[in-house]
Image (spheres, rainbow, N blue to C red):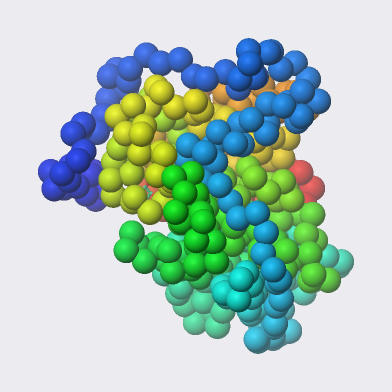
Length: 392
Ligand code: GTR
């Protein structure tokens, strides 16, 4: 409700947006999705080899150039230091590590502050859920004085998984006036280019640097990293997993427009609105698709396809029509054929399951939780079931 009111408010105060939001399924226009298994030159993709050699790189480049922006090619160095360690955190159940990850390029640097809890009862290296935190820092409180359903660390530890988080502001402040005061200071050429990354790209890049750290932590299994994000963070978790294939699995919670939902349905939030309200998220080229979804050379099912054959979990919330639950489900369904190239059969039913009917199994998982736009214990309970379904 709050989001609907907000949408109406933004609509009436915005100067450039001219189209009202549609929440009526019967008013979804007819559309034709770009074919995921046909190359730009028109060749059908029938096998994994052609997908990996030709079509996958093509699609990745299209997403970079038209939506999320080109990512930094390299950096000069990366180092880390443990700023706090407690082997008896959570009443002895976990080891807490607070880690400062420093990345340098051209004598500029960013510092990513990672909070990491590792289960003490697990033998050997732990698989880990890492959250790209777009909400308040108190949600991932290392002291555990504040506990939040958004990041229910105790529950995840009790289930035998490590849980980590970093805040988006370490990479790019989430404001159109200041987003460049982070990673982009190191890459002025990307800031200037129409196809250069902005905040969402910077957040995804940060997730990859955290993965670099996991590769150096003897208690973490860096081949079992599940990247998690909610809403704008869920757009970033998808983009992180799409371009960094070291992420073993992806959770995209209520990610909506330019996340897991199909743009061409024009249901709920639209490209014009997201670009108008958050011009600092996606590259300049994306603005060409304001009120012009059908001209996009991709749609979001193709972003999900880039994650294949790795497990993916998309969610929605029943009252969060802004994020288009049906469009999210359809994007997942349209990506199934890429999973099939790898012999991975999706267990998702043909039509969207009802509210609170989770399908938390690899390779493709989905649920529509009852309630508002949020990430809650209900969601995390199913993310754990999901991780267990592929034996992490
Ligand atoms: C909204 C935005 C959504 C989503 C959300 C959030 O205002 O329109 O695309 O990102 O914010 O991040 O909670």
